[in-house]
Length: 171
Image (cartoon, rainbow, N blue to C red; front, side, top):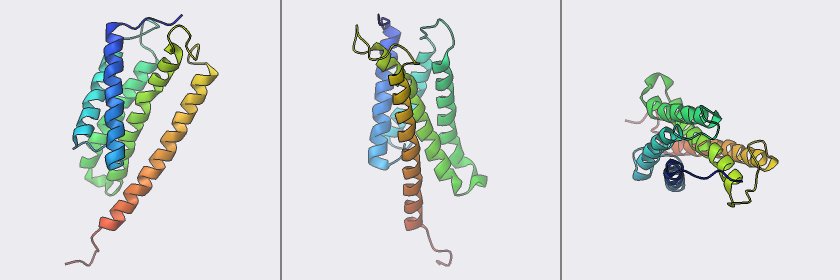
């Protein structure tokens, strides 16, 4: 029997879906979560609201792994915002910021995959819990997508940087 969804749970789900869509739009348009765009700002705000609303939700009655992932996602998001200001990181700033946002995007869906597969379709969910083989395989596939996507993103950033770099001996 699926757990009924509360009003807070419905709001959290809606905010999380908007956050996911904003991140996806940013990736399609800019190949990264670009914080200075509308989609990027919506993603950042949505991530904060999504994580904060998750603290009011718990099927176990207390702090759980989903909450820990939310905190980690916020730390990654904060890192993505702060890293560009750390001059001592040099050229790595661009990569570290992009990877931090990519990691937060990855973490956004980890609890979502579990919740979706254990709740839908209503009355006959596809998975019985987080230890279900379907959930585990789905999370492994999502991890693979993240790793490949992060690699492609770094290669793209490198090629963009090399095409726009100013020669050392330029006037």
